[in-house]
Figure (tube, rainbow, N blue to C red):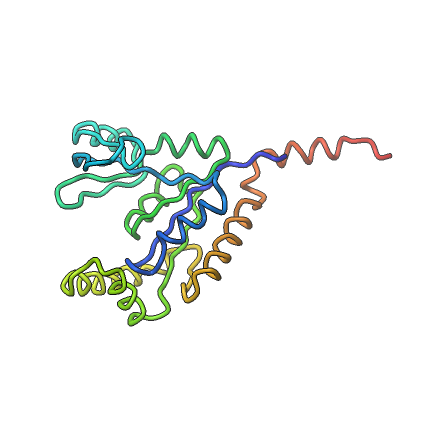
Length: 211
């Protein structure tokens, strides 16, 4: 078996377009996929486990990681810092395991610009229409009209960054979109430059005596 370096798979979309559901489906399809566990400076909520839901840290510890280049991306949200630690992702990559990132376009930009950016595969998920996106948001039954209006306004800004991504999928059918994502990952894993042991294999192959 030829070794390969693990990928960093960025999934982005407006809220309600289906990326979280697709991420869960991909991890069922391939249990070796790992989900990037973010670090945060906010306090744990009841039931949250350190290292499973988040890596809980102090602001000083978080900023030290940023200064040392150990955060692939980070942002401040409502006074708390959130980010993707580099160490666990590098370890997964070296073991040939892919890591999924559920981040917005800003997080995607930072990851692509990081020292590991050459190993990124980025996928943007679009809704079939804005009315359908609003219908899905309302169907959750979780948000007020005001919150939904805010999400719809933000979605236009997010969609405007679609051209920054390697692949863009219109999620008009969940099963078909999942199948397309599987095809993308399969093809990206098989790229010549991602198969770390391919050169050595070919050398051994060429050195073999013909029967």
